[in-house]
Image (cartoon, rainbow, N blue to C red; front, side, top):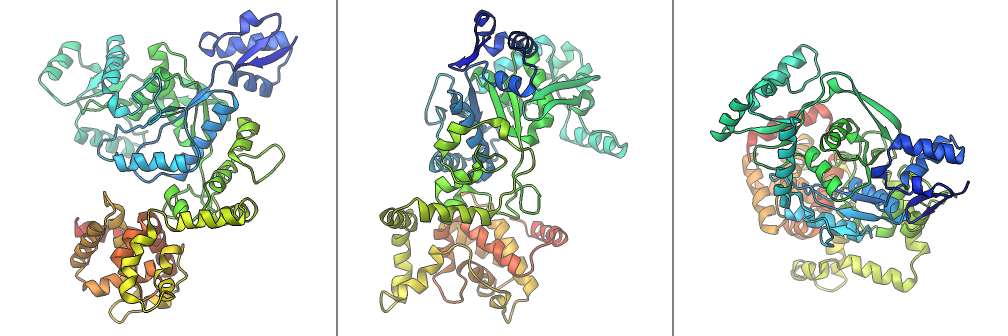
Amino acid sequence: MEVSEYRGVILISDASRLVKKSRSALGFALQWRIIQSLTGSANSEDFIKSRLIMSTVKTRIAPSPTGDPHVGTAYIALFNRCFAHQHGGKFLLRIEDTDQQRSTPKSEQEILDALTWLGLTWDEGVGVGGDHGPYRQSERADIYREYVKILLERGYAFPCFCSAQRLDEVRQAQMAAKQTPGYDGHCCSLDHSERQSRIQSGEPHVIRMIIPEQGECRFTDLLRGEVTIQWGQVDMQVLMKSDGLPTYHFANVVDDHLMGITHVIRGEEWINSVPKHVLLYQYFGWDAPEFFHMPLLRNPDKSKLSKRKNPTSVNYYRDMGYLPEAMVNYLGLMGWSMPGGEEKFSLTDMTSAFDIMRVSLGGPIFDVEKLDWLNGRYLREDLSDEEFASRYLQWANKEDRFGRIAPLVQPRVEKFSDVIGLSAQFFDGIMTIDAARFEHKNLSAEQSIKILQFSLWRLEGLETWSRELIESTLLDLAEQMGLKVRDFLFPVFISISGSAVSTSIIDSLSILGLDLSRARVRHALAVLGGVSKKLSKTLEKEYRALGK
């Protein structure tokens, strides 16, 4: 008996009619029985690999444009792209922007730019097109309304009129009774006429899904095996918000089905949400995709990768002068390895050799020191002298950096050689400073920490990064803190420029950008002793009291 693969389809000689079917037409158990009986193989790994290619593969990345382009997004995008292309399939990108309060066009564009810079291009989706658009969830509201109607008609969903106050009271009572917090089903018992009457009167409501009260949900994660979650631990998820837009869970399932996604590769934080998703597939009568839940990136101390401890924005690493090919290479080492153990490889190499079953479930450590080592290898080994010079100049003059710096240094110099000292901060990464630099006759170390932390929080909240807005934001904060502007700006000046003599701090912040500015301020805070959890809570309370 001979087993082969052709265009993403398992072919078994003498039985191709049985097996040459799409995954949608051939259930997991039946696939297993057919393959086992015809090949005589009971090897679970062989079967899992067979299961992966029973259909034309299509994966996706679906970022929310609510902040910086996260390295975790790039990490998941890389594995989705490699898996799809290794199996001759397609990689899709859509934007999950149903959170209208936090989603911004700027964030969306930065995500697209970051993935493009890394070379993680997509075959279908935003900016590329395809047969399953639109690819922004905010443009698919009519589609979601049609599908939520189906669930309501079938009795799998119901309108919920509970106020935020009532829901909070229910959760507080559940927690006090040491019960799992969740919706108590209050509106499930309303009869049809009452529901319609309240809807027609314009009463605000959401749409929730019905969840079984007893039993358990079993599903297969192809990296982790069978997973069992009790239905009692699953909340009656809101599917449609009162503003008529879907929640992530509902839109995710509808879009994955309509866009033909066959394999969902995402972070392990979504494992507990799978029962909701599986149930929705069942309610609609659709086949669920295969699930892989990747291990989360970790800080060196094993905590979840977060911007509080490590720069997490792709923009930061681009602005620091890392090569995109080195970044992709390093992300590929996160929980995965080449068959030959090579640590340095291209995206093409990774795609050709990719086997998702080589993913290790231990939390991969995002170690900037190792990234530095790997990036150095690329700079030394892969670039000719001419390429090195060209790419350095390209990085150094990104967005006409020289042109923006020139007006700042020209009034301060007497010869061209003076320019280097005044502009060095714009071409450096993290400044080398010590606590002594922050000594000031009018400020204690504690006050400097407070100024830096408050400034960081305020700057992170800016919708746009412009000189005018940066200046007005910091001056307002100085006034709110009751400090003279000169004293207030001193620790910010040192953290950003590393020196007491440099160009305007406002101009410096504007040119450096949020990511690098944020990294330098955090470094300065660490130099001053850091901000403990206890101190952070105290400062947060003070900060909130200032208002906006």
